[in-house]
Image (cartoon, rainbow, N blue to C red; front, side, top):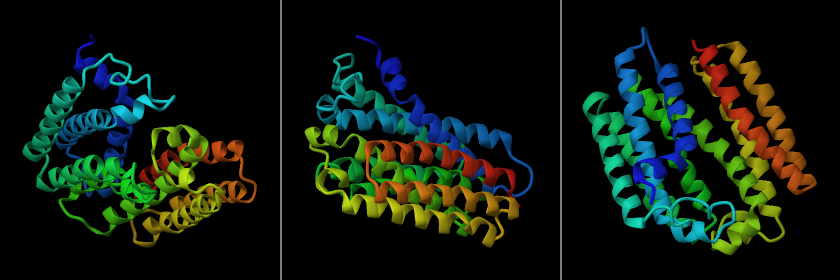
Length: 284
């Protein structure tokens, strides 16, 4: 059997890198003055540990669900390459190490925000996936907190900029997640995961939520310029990116299809890094 430190980590690398990247953006956008590179390195280490441990624990809790889904049954736990107890111990140890590291070397606020992220992900979002389609909204909360961790690491406060970053990440996840669920609806249904596209047989509510999420995201994405966090280049870029995203979401709503949902998903994967890069580039 593959050691848990290798096998568990390998399946969560991509998501962990994404969490770290969003944390770094939050740190940079919130930064006033010269970066404290030592503090930034500590932030990266602590976030990587906490994110990796949290994702490993999530796969422990969802091992039975993963075994019923074609797209996840090859993960180490359902595939038998890793014992559940090993994943539980590894995930718990790495999560605690990450939280402790953040508390010791970055600050109390960074520790608290990351701890809230972990708790909500493990004990709210994960169990609710089997109970209610509102799990998407609940799950968007921990998914939107990494840039807030970065912000508090650079400023030691929860100013309006932190909440704007949170709002952007929160709203982005709605069309992104619904597009994924729309594409893999049958797979989720077999596993008993009650995402909106699974319980919304006609798809009317799903398409409406995708468009609503895109429109709300467009509006909130303009706030960094309005609150003095970014300049006019960001504002124009955010508007154009958001308008394109709204157009694709609307097309999916008017003529629903797997192809249209795939385009929404692909657009969401391009939209967020482009928006965050613009924000970092045109930071005031």
